[in-house]
Amino acid sequence: MNRRCKKREWRLRAVALLSLRILRGEPKGAEVHVGESRLRPIHFVNFGHGQLFTKVTAANLHTMGPAQDRPRLECDEVRFRHWEIAARIGAITWEKKIVLFKRFIGVATLVGCSVAEAQTPGVIWNDPTTQAWADTYQSLYVADWQDGINAEIAVQANPGDIAVVADPVVAGRKSLRVSMSRNESFTNVANGSPRAELLLPAPVSFAQGKDYLIRWSTFLPVGFAFDPEQLVIITQIHQSLAVGSPTIALTLLGTQYAISERGGQNPTNVSGGKSFCCADADTGKWVNWALRYIPDDTGAHSSVELYKNGQSVYAVEGVPNAYLNDQSSYLKIGLYKPNWVTQPSDVSQITMFFGPVYVSQR
Image (tube, rainbow, N blue to C red):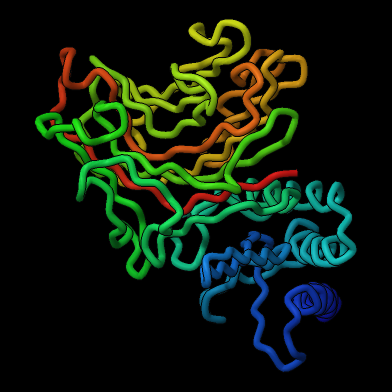
């Protein structure tokens, strides 16, 4: 690389480093490695004394490997654009100009990387594009399972069906294993139906007219038995004031995912929904989900957007997606297979894993 190119490269690196050190509050002597513009969030969570404290710094850049493994930077606009974008992200975020911040992050993601490396140790189980979006929301609740299941979380399962275990892929991390068998008795579980679910506590409560973002992850183990006869709900937003099917449900039927919405005057009917593939291609790896939810029992101002690994798979506005007058629907994760015992099924055992859950509002 010629001298002019090298000088330009290191000038841009210095600007990016300075911006990020200011953001992170690091001392001048702190060791910071900046690579191409692959964004990573930083979260600190403290569940001590029954309270939740969450600090989310704006963005830092993906750490590069050893110097001898780094790609050689040539003097071209594409390479230098990485550093320019990195510097802009740091400066703009510091000024809290959220709209421009999102724009630059989108560019950085397109230029610098593809979908997040969800299995890389140290990276949270959510893709960088979605994380940038989430940074425009205010955190309400985080459940990361590192210290087990918080006592405030309601467990609706037989003993042993839900447990915090080692991550099935990455050493040193925790996840939630949810498992149930068709031949076990569910008499003592909520309404006596086959389920193994967690009910997240307040402040995870959804009021109409508010804008919420829910992020979580699922893992289907290799050899997962798909049931083409009966669906299983794997995540749901459940109404608080009435019985009936959940207002929002993410399900599996065979190898197909599906999302459904209900609400308004006739919640027995689905007001919006979609089936999409392909769960069988997801076995053995984490899948990152993000759900934007604006509830409205009239549908006038409602919105539901579902993202899978940062890609939109469903988006509908203008349909009822909350039960009438419901201002406190709640979130459940886990397995619910309501007709498993009474109707034909191709499977007798079901097990899957869940990663951390993030709920935020703006």
